[in-house]
Length: 108
Image (tube, rainbow, N blue to C red; front, side, top):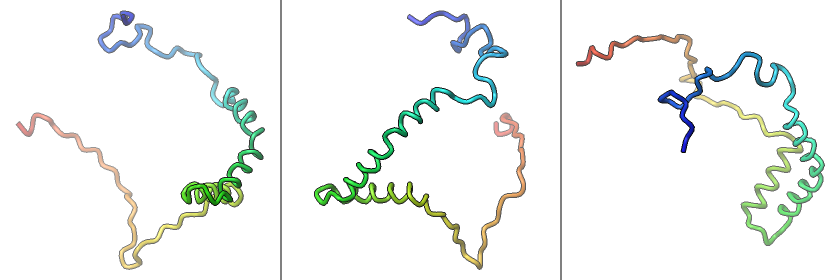
């Protein structure tokens, strides 16, 4: 049975987040840092695994291509994506934002 909070939407009576609670702005997320450091220990093995998949002629071609793609991305970075348009009809950026207030009773 759910704990009764006294509100229909189930929120706490305390108003949610308290002043001064939580991680301070600009501080490092220590758990994420630890996990990254642990994962980096396996970098060489992960690369070797990708190379093994890429070279395995019995592996599905999709897996081999994905492994090759991942290796290239890590070695050289992802390729830049160029935006190509029609020179006769260039792209136009939106430069105006409007806020329109609509009376919901007007359609009745």
